[in-house]
Length: 411
Ligand SMILES: Cc1cc2nc3c(=O)[nH]c(=O)nc-3n(C[C@H](O)[C@H](O)[C@H](O)COP(=O)(O)OP(=O)(O)OC[C@H]3O[C@@H](n4cnc5c(N)ncnc54)[C@H](O)[C@@H]3O)c2cc1C
Image 1 (cartoon, rainbow, N blue to C red):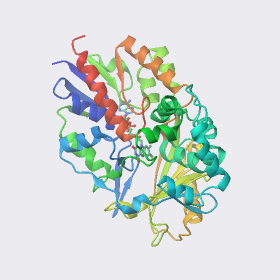
Image 2: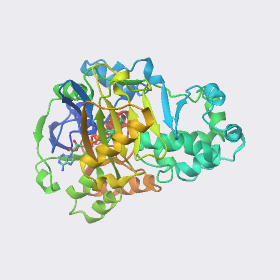
Image 3: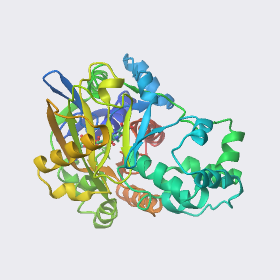
Image 4: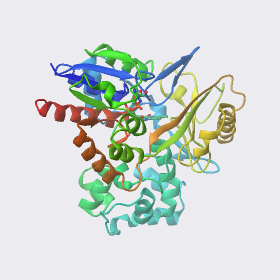
């Protein structure tokens, strides 16, 4: 059997190992924590996600993987459907399009502008999320909807994110149908999210441990610093963040330079426990605060007693230079302003200096160049830096990569 090395024991590396375990003799190297950004910290009675909060049930590959390894995801309760934004005051975010039009989330003029989307000329060339949303729905929509959304998913801003790379399906609908509304109607999608939020009874680490237990491989806790350390292997997959992959392949200058071009946004996660905190719901996303949002974990999943605040992102990258105490102070001030809560009896923090890759303008072209260059030197790249940041994307992309690797097994 050929020997395969996988560098990086996050969900991308682990799910790839699971899919390839019967075809290769696999060794996985992890420098820090198995699960990577999918890691649950237990502090006394508190279960706190350092990264991934959950996933939507609209990706068959994730659900199939759960079933195959024998773990049942837990659906967030009905509170998860109540979402809020903070724009100097708390505003309930309606889910159904008709409720949206009835709500006071935007001015009458802005709602009328949204309806004009049917008639806006389509544009297929690459553009930022801000350009796309301004053009199709108007500036008020960008401010009230896209700023919070980009903060929540990418820890980024609409200006800094490529629409084509971050939301390729929406861009495709615009291109094919001429308008998102027309496309959604033809596809019979009401414009609502197509899946429901899930996690696991004891957090994401429960899934990671179960997955690991079902993989036939050698698990080695070691940082790989240089590709030459892996000479004994027939194939090498690097499933680390792009800047780490750049270091590992540093002797291949061009590939290393291309990988270094993918920027990362920092995010700190601060946990609190306030006796009484409102609103009851999934959480709040903000428009201009240094804290991007508040996740009310304790109201939506079992065994969670805390809430978590996300601080920083592309909106406030300076958190990289602050002490933990300073970041906690920012989070505390923001959460108390947004919710009115007082006197948390618990505080916890995890700082990710390079949390999430920023899919900037030109990202798709850059990824093509990176993959071409990697192919030339026989290295395979995986992970959330390239074709989707979500937990679901990582599993789906690893599955597709496994098919490609198997197809080329004898080359
Ligand atoms: C704060 C935060 C919240 C998030 N929330 C969600 C969410 O709710 N839902 C969602 O779908 N997605 C979420 N994400 C996105 C999430 O990052 C991805 O879905 C996914 O977990 C990334 O997995 P990965 O395996 O590609 O990378 P990672 O999880 O980063 O794994 C890479 C691994 O490689 C290891 N490594 C790096 N260098 C080396 C080396 N030299 N040698 C050996 N090992 C090395 C690292 O230690 C790490 O374990 C969140 C991300 C963050 C940061």
